[in-house]
Amino acid sequence: MTEFNQSEWIESENVQEFIKNSDNFILERKQQFKILGSFYNHFLRHKIKNRNVRVLDLGCGDGRISHEILKLDACAEIFLVDGSLEMLENAKSNLKNWNNIHYIHKSFQSLMKNDNLGNFDFVVSALAIHHLSQKEKELLFIYIHNHLNDGGCYLNMDVVLPNTDQLEEWYLKLWWEWIQEKEIESSFEETFRHIPQLYQNNPDNHPDTMEQQLNALQQSGFKM
Ligand SMILES: C[S@@+](CC[C@H](N)C(=O)[O-])C[C@H]1O[C@@H](n2cnc3c(N)ncnc32)[C@H](O)[C@@H]1O
Image (cartoon, rainbow, N blue to C red; front, side):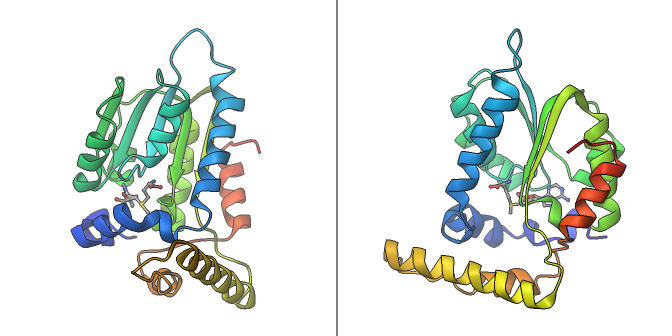
């Protein structure tokens, strides 16, 4: 189990690198935002009419995911949770023009132990849950399921572990190729081609297979 205060996210250098450059090395980040927007419109915004949609953003970072939701639905009431105070301070500054926003400085582990946030229509997380151990993920899925209103949705935009080493090798290569293409297109001065290898060697990353995640979600009560 990696406690948050031993993770890479307590290092300001890692926080700043992610904030500054994540769009340049996260595969299809813009496309992921489009899918998030379409999901939100389809399952939430057009379904919940008489009140504000309540959203929980787990591992919110500097608020990019919440910002995408607010661009579609300025009335959403969003709870942003992150173990990093530095990330939350950046989120506060990025979302200062919106109301109904709550910032919660907590690790997922302590949120699950001590929680008074109420229930949500939408729980979303991007690139955060793979930092948890398998057991912690299972507990978090149960927590999320228990905190969803009737008809609520959970969307996890995260990495998975391929089933074979050969596939993993190719996925990492594909990621590397995407970064290379983007660098050439945008004439970056800095290179991000080392990121896939860094991701693979980082002991803070605990991705598991799609099958394991789907099983854990089903066992927590989710319908897919
Ligand atoms: C890769 S960043 C993603 C940020 C944001 N979701 C995005 O897509 O831009 C991962 C975030 O998860 C947070 N995080 C990682 N493990 C956590 C934990 N156990 N509890 C709370 N936050 C955590 C980190 O502090 C970091 O802000």
